[in-house]
Image (cartoon, rainbow, N blue to C red; front, side, top):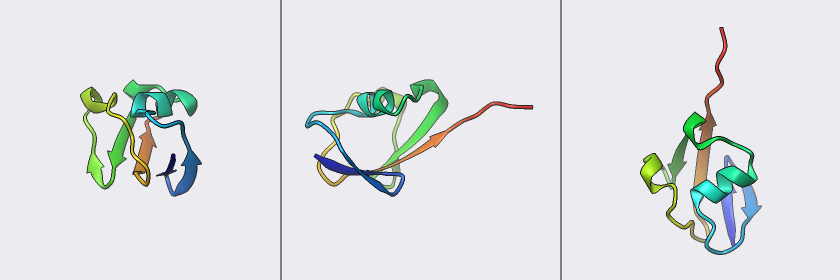
Length: 65
């Protein structure tokens, strides 16, 4: 299955969800905001399966001082 993540096409296994995508990208779910097909996704919905052609934008929060 092909999706777009932050403007870059990615191949994923069918049935992959946002939690699985974050795991593959070594990102912590609590430290990101995700937009799926131009709509912000609530963390409670990260287990929903992605579909062919989905467009995902991930913003990773970084702490600092």
